[in-house]
Image 1: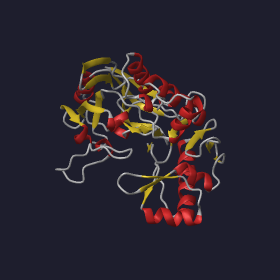
Image 2: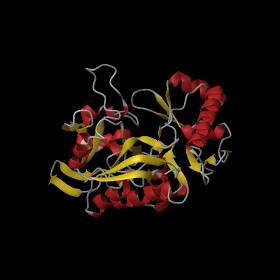
Image 3: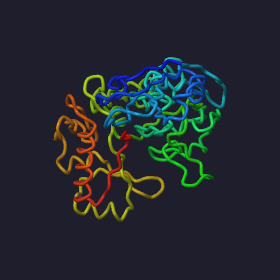
Image 4: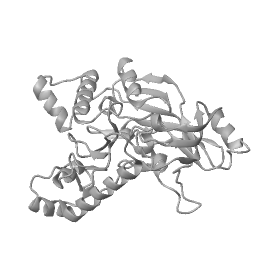
Length: 346
């Protein structure tokens, strides 16, 4: 077990916010978690699980024991007619895991390329992009319960996936409820990639790429390349300018609510959903309120994509939160819609 005191967290959050952890433990195996739980000093302390830091806003130093998940591993568990099952350690970089699967000749994760963060964090958020969600490829995961020390495995139904949601984002309302927010350290995640492979091309930007290139039957590698190009053109690289990707969830409304908004703002970007609701583009709502390029202190709204908040240099977590709340207020006042942030404020 590797333990660090007063550890700098700026390298471990993609916003690049300056903060420290009183105690940071590098978790590379289940044994490290068990060692923390049995430790005479750390065992009873609150714990904070940290993956790639791509979905958090730090508003100060972290007093809880930070468990920095760095579990490695990439392997093929099954490759048969029903599909291919691959397993990654929770500490593996998500994009590198996607690239590795493509290099091994296994399609299925290509639409999720270039999403920041680690593999272990991917089921927590049920990450999704370009017509695909993690739950569409999820097989199972292994984790450790921080309350009991018990190791357990969850399948897709037990993860209770929803739109950018899972059991890992909810606390139990009663002792009998199943909620794992702040309670689990994910160690390994497995994905089932379908056979025969079929492209997911319903997203408008991918259809445009098909038209522009003249490639009507792209393979997994081609879609991977397109997704990387599209994301790179729209979203800032966290290594260059601090950000946490899409800051707000795309809200869903009833068809009647959507028609009411269309009557006032005909250009609103919206997508009918299978359950009958309508998803609205949060970036469009924010842009319509005039926020693109605006700043609060050193926290700003990205010039190329209003859904992304950025660190213009030295931003504090407080500035990011203040900017986010101002955006929420203006969107609610104009459209009557409450935007829900994706990142966790710590």
